[in-house]
Amino acid sequence: MAWNLSADKPIYSQLVEIIQIQIISGRYKAGDRLPSVRELAAEASVNPNTMQKALAELERNALIITQRTSGRIVTEDTELIQKTQSDLANEYIRNFFHTMKELGYSAEEIVSLVKEMAEKE
Image (cartoon, rainbow, N blue to C red; front, side):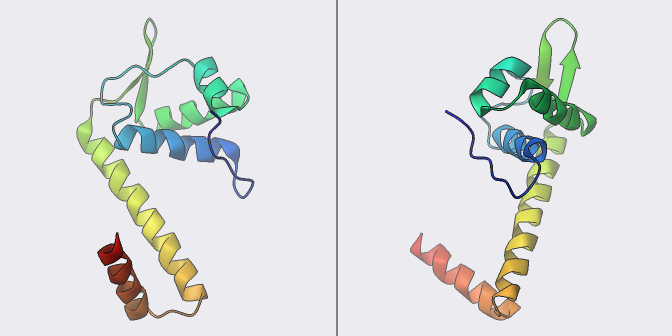
């Protein structure tokens, strides 16, 4: 099944975010081996070069490590994984608040709406 990608930002950056989410949510745990570039590209329905670019970005961020004989593995640095989770959550919250403020809501109204929604969930 293809991954849900949109046209509003570069595909490789969306791939980076999706793989980050797969790591922080536990689909790929610390020390797990990732599927090959071709396997991931086929799963996401993207060009392998695009997937390679996304994986290179994750490697630059030290979230994954390349080992010559066993491919790419998820870092065993659980603090880095938790920091990535926190950073991604903060980015989502900032974007959410920005959008809500564009809709005319004050910070207090946004918090109230979030509380209401949380109670319904």
